[in-house]
Length: 157
Image 1: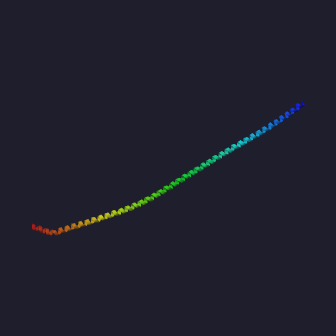
Image 2: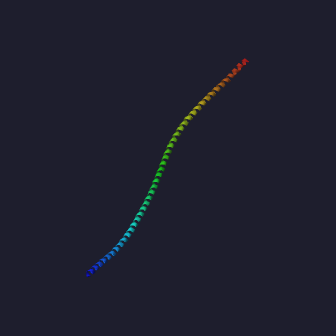
Image 3: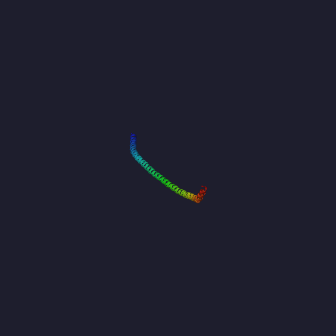
């Protein structure tokens, strides 16, 4: 019996060692689960931080793009206005040149017309003077012929 009793003590000692190991393993398991929970919380917090940073960066990039787009739009509009002014100035210059050319042509045409009018007036004046001289000559002839005509008529009478 002594052999049984020593065997039972060995089994009890093995059982006690197993129970201690189980307790130690349970404690280690709880610690590792607590560590895993802390790690999971840390990972979740890191994910939230990364997500927030990404959203913040995306918002910053969107704002940057909005500003860049606004500037590009303003630059394009400014370039358009400058080009429109340049074209308007160019057209005004061309119009001024055409207006000057037309004014010069009109002045030349007016000078030609005035010269023609003056020529016609001189011709009319010369015609009038000739007509007046012709009328005067006829009047003088008729006056000079009147006494002879009166004598001729007196003779016949």
